[in-house]
Image (cartoon, rainbow, N blue to C red; front, side):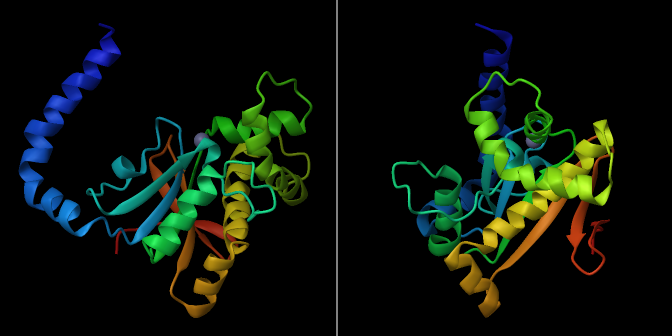
Length: 217
Ligand SMILES: [Zn+2]
């Protein structure tokens, strides 16, 4: 057996012994009453940014949607042959689970955003689905260049990662069932950004148009 598969199986044994066994009431309630998370979190599939670990939540707390580069595509229904995985998860979170909050959970050193940058800069790509998907964030590249003309390398990547969070927030507003709830005040959307090198979390502040550190209340 490969070491990583052994690690996963041992991890599950630890989960049963040390975690599940201490939360049997919680799990029983979540089975009986169903899940009622108040928050949907759209995070990257990156192995370093698991929102349940970073935010230290319990089962039932967050509805986690993970994809490449934590992107939300624009609302689109005309092509029914396309499989809208992320849009389906967002729709379920909002219209079935009735979440109160959606958090777009961006992060530093995102390979998905770097892929988008490479495509924008004409570097040859050896993927099909990734570049198609990350093109959702191409506006972030244009905005980063407009904000900081000539920005390159790591600084460009950090800037694009943050702008991509804002593009996803804008795209969330294109979903009619989200826009309706935002207008009614029954849903809030948030743009967060995790710096995995520093272990810092910040939130987009519309008033100052910057990401400000999130502090424990
Ligand atoms: Zn990422």
